[in-house]
Image (tube, rainbow over all chains, first blue to last red; front, side):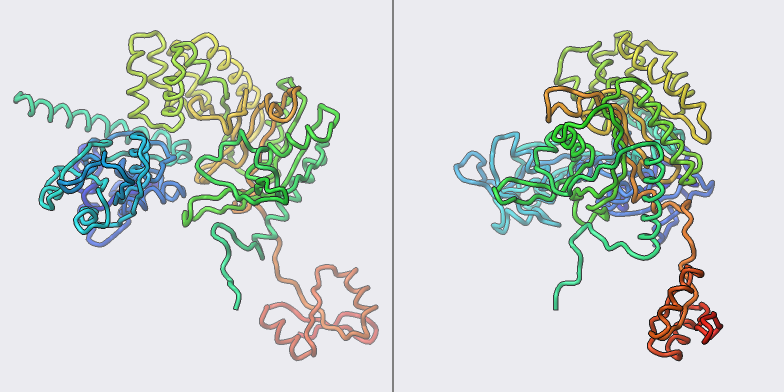
Length: 221
Length: 385
């Protein structure tokens, strides 16, 4: 039986593929997947299931897959209960509180906050001791303060360019976000050796990549 | 027209699954009665405070108000009602009880999980000896055999283990809780950050491998012999090992250890045991020792050991044999009632055809691919297919 891995398709998939390859997993069929959603590796050891991020956790929770590769934003928002085994240190970005230039959090009154992440937003404002009204938005969260739907937004940003292009300013930095490898708790019991071998191989690659990045940053060739 | 859809997270049970479930419950009840367990059936509704110490693990309860505006809940657990029952009824202890019933927990909507599930279980109350744990291990082995569960994996642990390690390395209660949470949630990136300050201590090699300390008895034992454990933790591990050695002598099961997982509930105080099988998404049996079970109900504590059996998960296993649902039919006229009664005694497998006339009865039999019989004047069976 291959180890079933739910991989978040799109950006996470593109960033994780090189790590999987460097860890010795043959990803050639995954690269030539076309519109296929289930891809087995040529050695039959792994089966990749391509899914949207929130669905990765649904599959994991139901035990339909053994391992999931998904952003920590989704894990936090969905109150992940499965085993978070490795920070893959790709897909790095950060939650921010952003708004137009006239926003003032300390002005009296209950603020309205637009976000895709109501739980994370609620927790953040709880730490500030502030009561806010949260509006759940599914896409283009940046629109909310621009069209008067919300006073500010809590969203993820990688470089800040979308915010800048829409004349939005960062008012606070919240949690960092990165891609994580998560295992279903029962699968971890049933396939411990296979899952930990994968984790160890990937951890080695992540460490190597981090070291290389730091060396490049410090000018070491 | 009334609504035909069910409330979220519920289902109708019928046909082969319902029959399998009944058969399974009967089999478990017969076994437990033969082993002298007393049946206890508690109501579906209890006051909310009965479950004050129950960890719902992000799920919620169904709540209602009674005539005094007090909150009552559909029970989310079946052990705590037994504790309430024991305190209220002044039963002579020690005593062994069993229960079968439904419990209710509201799962996140649209997650594919059911909110009403059936559980059987045993509670041995008033037994301080480790023979109560032995009885549970024997029962698991016996029931697994009866239910034809092949290659079960019996996982042993101890609710005190993590606290005994952490008490030896820090007095910072907040840090202890954080390490335990990260360990239990297997949030390894966070766990590694939390144990970093202990890198120079003798316990560091153990802390490093702790999240991976689960697996076969031999494997975990070997890993632990290579590292240093605090004395109290070592003593607990010795106790677990003793049970593992005993349980290894029972047939058809593999003994596993897990020293890195949370006990099923906060009220557990000693050995924990769980049973799983390859490719089944949850534990089939789960239990352990909980000597403080009655603390919220009465001043005098009673030692107790118990376990729950996930009936719904078992029903979905293919190991249970169910008899063929098809039965041959008997066509009769109302004036033949006395003869029908006799024939049904002789051939209990026959199903009465309730069709108005023979032609309809024959058509029903053909559609169901079974034979149709009718009664002769002498009251004998005659093929009428």
